[in-house]
Amino acid sequence: MRGGAPPAARKRGPAHRGDDLGHHRLRPAWPGHAGAAVTGCSKAQKLYAEIADDYGQAEVLDHLATARPATGDSAQGRTEWIQAAELLTVRVARGEETRAKAEAVVLPSQDG
Image (cartoon, rainbow, N blue to C red; front, top):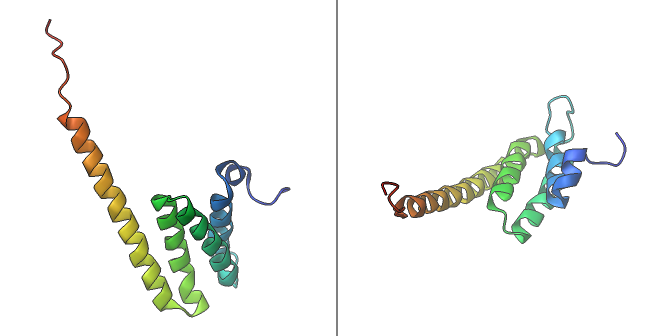
């Protein structure tokens, strides 16, 4: 493949490119690449944090945590999974608040 990142990753921006690189290096078919996965995902995680993308950041933290045992840092992986869970919990809470707002809207009667 020419041009580095897969076409879908190029469309989504630099954070996704870093995540894609890290995520693909986690595949069992590519043993020994956990360090490269951590490097790629770490870059993506920082970019997601800069743009305040909680979901993207949580996804990358999950990828990082998955790679950590292969690098000998299971404790850091556990921390990253906790961080990802916290980010996703905030996202779910926001979703519930938004749904409640939508349900509270009183629409004009169609009987008219």
